[in-house]
Length: 121
Length: 107
Image (cartoon, rainbow over all chains, first blue to last red):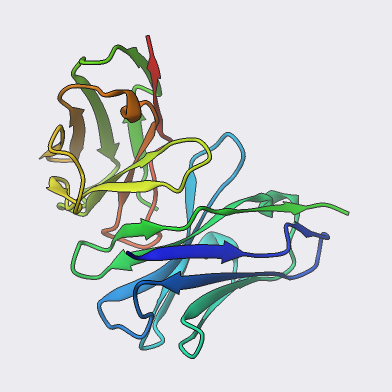
């Protein structure tokens, strides 16, 4: 059974860098059949697509993040990460990691439970 | 960005009811339209990809259809575990945008 689990600091100060990690079990991230994705949800609002990354290293980010986001894969630990620089209160949200199937019209097939991030001094 | 408009934003229904949720895209996404279910405190669950294909393990009471840029999620007979918020998503062009959600509540 594929499972994804986010981990992160919970609280980040404005202007600092947010780092989140998603640990995957039940599947290898070293696969060309999937993308590894981050999605967030602001309180009381819909879902925002942050971006995704392939095993080959291709990355796609939401332009709205203005180049603040960087994703990476760690195949030795079967996990992937998101770094978001210069955070503001607008980055406070629930962050989800997800697996995206290349052969299922790039839809998400598995989601993590989410990790809540608050940006506050 | 491609905009997705879901309707209604919320609805009240009873167990056994047939429920229909619509998602309209601002431009063609071909069949690259997906549906997800989100219950509070849980991980979202993937229901449908490619507008009408069910993900593994999803009950057959869920179905999806497409008519041009209008997509529909139907639950044929609402079950207690179906009370949740439903989101559509287009994966045709990046950024892969989502609808604002439809909350299905108990009448």
